[in-house]
Length: 52
Image (cartoon, rainbow, N blue to C red; front, side):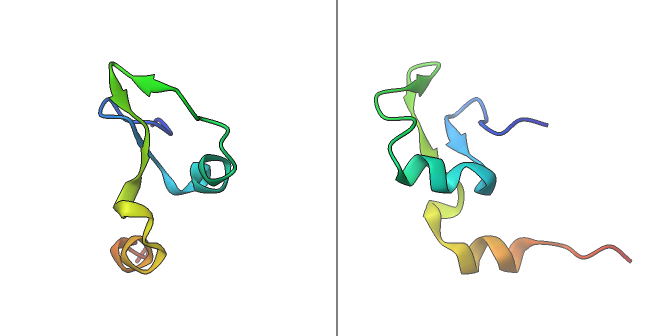
């Protein structure tokens, strides 16, 4: 479990901080940080699986 994967993709919990510029100029293993799901909330929400 990590909030930033090895490719520099930020999970939803960090999107707001990303938008505020908290991660500006930072990278992970040389990859610039970016939002998961291209920052598309609907796309992210539709991928969530509900527990049975």
